[in-house]
Image (cartoon, rainbow, N blue to C red):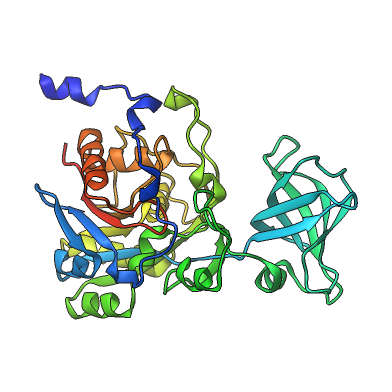
Length: 357
C-alpha cells in the first residue's frame, strides 16, 4: 500500500531546490581532468572516491555512451552604430551564413540593421533578420559575414569566445579552449559542454578499455537553455528548450549487443540520457527533442548515469531525481555540500544507479 502512495507523489518546483554555498561553485577546472572527485552512489551505500577510480566501478561488457558534441566558440561581442554594447551567443548555424543567437543588448537593433562585431579588422558583422524559430521565438536570426567571405563556423573559430556558463564569474582564457571541451569532442554545435565528459582523460579511457568496457557515442548539441531554471511551480506548465540530437547506427547496434550480453548501459551525462530516451520514445534517430524527464518517467535505455552536480530548480535536477529517486538525490546533494564537493560545469561528478522502484 505504502509503495503505491509513494509512486503517486506529485512534485512541484520547490521539491528540487537546495541551498548551495556560493564558494562550492567551481570557477576553474581541477588541475587534472581525472583528478576531480566522484560521489559513487551506484551501490546501496554512497562512497567518496576520486574520478580515476571510476573504471573500477564498471564491469567487462558494460557500454559507456558519450555525447561527442563539440562546444563552439559561440560568444561574439560587438557594438551598435550608437556605440551601445552587444553580445551574441550563437545557438545554431543555419543555411545561408545565418545563425540563430541569443542577444544581450540594452536596446534591440531594428530588423535589417548591421552591427560591427569584434573581429581582427576583417569587417566581421552581423545583420539582424528577425526572430527564430518564428516571430515569437526567443532567439534572433542574423547573417554573419566578413570581408574574407568566411562561413559562420570559421568566423566563430577565429573571433568567438568560449561560452562559459553564467555562474562562472570570469572571462574565458586559453585554458578554457581545452578544458571546456571533452577529449573526444567531434561534432561542433554545442554552446555548453556535456560536463560529465570533462573528467575523462587518456589514462581513464585506457583503463576502461583494459577492463573490457565498450564505448559508443551519440550527439546532442547542448543549448544555453540547459542553464535555465524552471520557472513554473507546476512542472507540467514548463516549456522545455529544443536541442538537436543523433543516435548513429553503430551506437544503436552497440546498445543491442550490450543488452544481448546482459551488460549495463552507462550514460555519460544527462545529455546522453536525453538523447537515448528521446530515441526510445520516438524511434527518431536524428532530430530535435524537447524531452522533459521528471519523476515517474520510465527509462528504457540507461542503467547507470555519470553526471555532475546540477543547478537547483533546474530540469537536470528533475532528470537525476527521476533516475535515482528524489529523496536519494536530495540526500546525496546534502552529503556533497557537507563534504565540500565542487559543483556545476567545472565541478566534481557523481555515479548513480537507476532506481529499481
